[in-house]
Structures are given as structure tokens and as C-alpha cells.
Length: 278
Image 1 (spheres, rainbow, N blue to C red):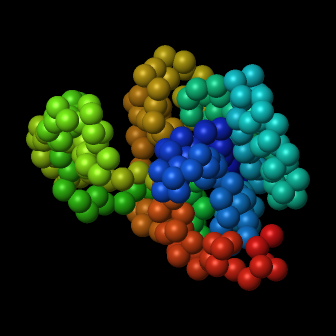
Image 2 (tube, helix red, strand yellow):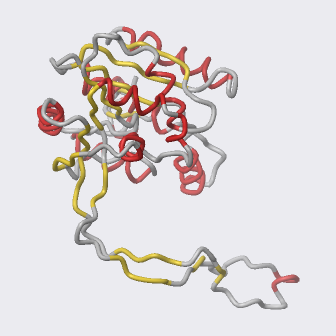
């Protein structure tokens, strides 16, 4: 098995940054990939998952697009080029708008002799080694393999319309709304049968010719796919699911970062001795 790993890292962590601002009541904005995870950035932790695996021959990290965000690309290179270079990583620019554009850009750097290609979320630094082994073993038997976990919660589809549950008070125009809670609400349309539903994770692993062929068919890229398996599905190819792992969380909000630290058994910089914070 000659495996190339693509890690899309071109996003701007919008939801994370907004939540961080709300929690800290400041204009503080950071990328979740830059956050400290036991003394190393989240992105570096994610890369290390694959740098230490025997099956992996190539790792490609696709950062911000230089034309769309020149400062972000420059900062990304300054922050990560040396760190990731020591791990044998190839850096490239990602897409302007969509995740699939970033994967497509990275595909150009995958060596011709790669037999398999894995695509992994940059914000999933806790993937257990046994899950990687399970996926890579299955990928030698099946052309497209993804990890998935059962959905434990009840699922409901809601209306698109979101409303404000606070009654309009004419005095608000004079006295303001300080101290009054404002909750956004929606109505339930239906309850969804979760019997065969799964929550899909990464890495998603494909036979290299299959993924190249899928991305070469531009008609499969609209509407924008939410993961790589969806493009393969649009070709009519079968995608095989193996058991994922609850620990393989994706960091989306600051609370997820706390969970990731707990899973890895590491502390945040504010909890470490001063001489170990840098």
C-alpha cells in the first residue's frame, strides 16, 4: 500500500472564531488549527497521526489560497512551513471558496505511484491509531472506505424560518433590551428515522484512480459536495462504511478543543508551568 494523505486546511474557522469572541467578550479571533494542544498546534497534531504510520508515503497540507487571502497564506507558511517540513509534508495553496477546490489542488501533488489517497479533516487531531489501521486494511479490499458512527440522538427536521421568542415591548425603544433574554426558535416539521443513519468522519480512503476520476468529472462537483465520498457516490460507485470512533471528533467550537485535550490527556497552555508553555 502506497498511501498519500491530503489534509485540507484552507478554511477560516469562522464558527470557531465567532464562538470564541462570544465566550471571551473580546474581538479575539484565532484559527482552531493554531490552538495549543499539549504544546503543539492542532494542525501539527493532525499531521503527526499520519507521519508516524508505516502505510503513509506522502502527506499534503493545503492551506489558504494566496489570491483570495494573501496575508492568510503568508502567515500560514510562516507558521507551518518549517514545523511540517520536518515531518516531510508538502504544502500547497487550497481553493478559493469550497473544500473540494482545496482537495483538487492537493491532488495535483499526489505522486503517480500512489495506490490509495486518504482525505482527512485538519481539525481532527484525535483519530485513534486503531481506526487508521481499520480503515487502511478495509481500503485494500474496497475502493472507497469511510468511518461512521451510529447517531444516538433523536433527529428532527425543522422549518427554515427562525423567529425571536421575545415579545415586542414598546418601551424597548426607550429603555433598551439590556437584561432581556432573546432565544431564536424554529418549529419541528418531522422526526427522522435514525435506524440506518450514521455520522460520517474522516479520514476517507479511496483507491487513487477512483478519486482522481471522480474529481476529473466537474459535473459531479455541483452542488458543492460536503465530503469526498459524496463525489464518488455521484459516480454511482459504492462506498463502504467501517466503524468509526467517538474520540475522532472534529474541533468546531472552543468546547471541542477542551474535549480534544481531555481525549489526548494534555493541558492547555494556561494550565501548564510557565517554562512549558512555549
